[in-house]
Length: 433
Ligand SMILES: [Ca+2]
Ligand SMILES: [Ca+2]
Ligand SMILES: [Ca+2]
Image (cartoon, rainbow, N blue to C red; front, top):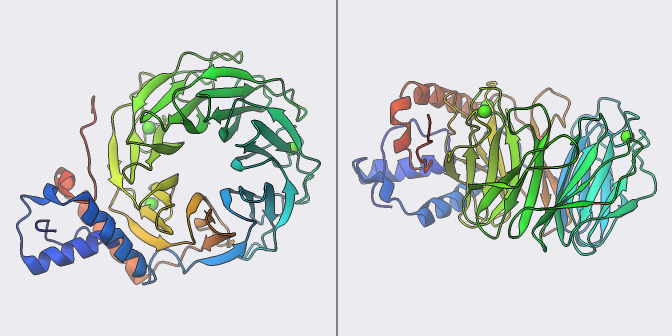
């Protein structure tokens, strides 16, 4: 790294700490900082991972057995007792696993339920209207989605499978018709489609309606993505570097896929309001170039080109939640390529600070946030897809390091006009802003 900025305002990111430190020694001017090669950033991320146990946002990870090859993880209060529980789906053994929480951050042994071969996607929601959380699991190798109805006591009934398209990757739950009943949507990686299964309201589903999506759909989410109140679909197409939005007509039909460019190999999509205008923006992890993209809603039913930020290698999952405790949403990204999680602290100008890196386990495939310790903070859980565990990262009390991070955030706010010079944020212009 031969040129990059000086100054302390990037200390919020551990990677940037290293970059800034190197530059302070080199005494280089900031003019040519954009020459910093991507590979150097990634190497810096790997190095920073080993430094992540400095006092920071999260305690060291605590691992719990899940099942073999957990591909997805979710949190939920399965017993309605105020204690957050964990659910995983395990690609390696074809199961869903439930880990009951004690409300203080510890979890019991996995109780497993057979689903289908290669379960990859997991969604939680109330599918039959009884108030108890139910599960939907997409089974990549036999073109089905498995429904498990919760009993409200942490256990689930007999799994029931429904057909989807070929190679289901992700699954989402939402009221896609506005009838007040939960429906299912599944991204079908092998045939480039989305399968929509309308719910009867009792936990059973109609045969799938197959819609075109694009090449190799890897993930999908449900959200209000246009100007009406009906939930729509967003689907990442790993084959051509796009996310497509399918607008709901409210009767189970959808408009044609509207594509927006992402980075290469988009691997997951979620929604959240980054810009603070009340509209859901799109968050996409790009496995092909180790970035996360934010595509802001334009207010005209579309999405802008947005910003991309470096993550660790092979980002697989992203959430938007406030992990720093300043009421501004932060990005958390699971990095399948180096056993880490990246946290990008949100600034109040809708940009994000460079990543802070925290260790998880082997092959992080999915990440979820929730109050796992009962202390009112945002904790994280990571599915270690190349192992048999989940890692729980408990939020730390405000520490010296996080205080320093917020100080730097204040500094960053005071110099918003210079934010594009940050080496940790490869930002591009956002049309219309
Ligand atoms: Ca239910
Ligand atoms: Ca927004
Ligand atoms: Ca925050």
